[in-house]
Length: 169
Image (cartoon, rainbow, N blue to C red; front, top):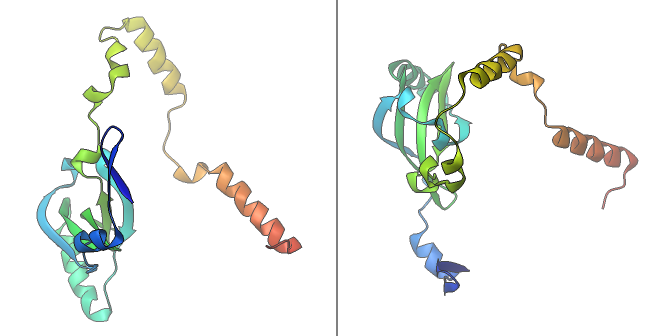
């Protein structure tokens, strides 16, 4: 494997090199800070995972922690599958949800996007009002179930048809 450290220049990395820096999977979430939920910019959220207690003994502790964390998020790290993740844990319904987070250096600031420099700061009020009227005609309560991934649905139908016809390779 290689890593480009400057334009057109690479350093090679062996599997042995990687094993020296790869964190051991612990499956332990180490929360080191608590903050209010609104302190986390949604741009950092990557994936959600439901957390559940490991057996009945831990169920009561889970409930106590869930209630104690209302409105809060625990921030920390998790080492899993040879990788270290920044995580946020938040209470939700019956148990906590853990979100993997992007690190700050993985998110570009809006000021780094050159194409946005051409966007005007001053707008014509009548144009903004017209845009608000058009948007208002499509406004309503969100029903996320009404949105579908047509590609995934088509792929599922294709696989089902192939299985039914047993054209399996």
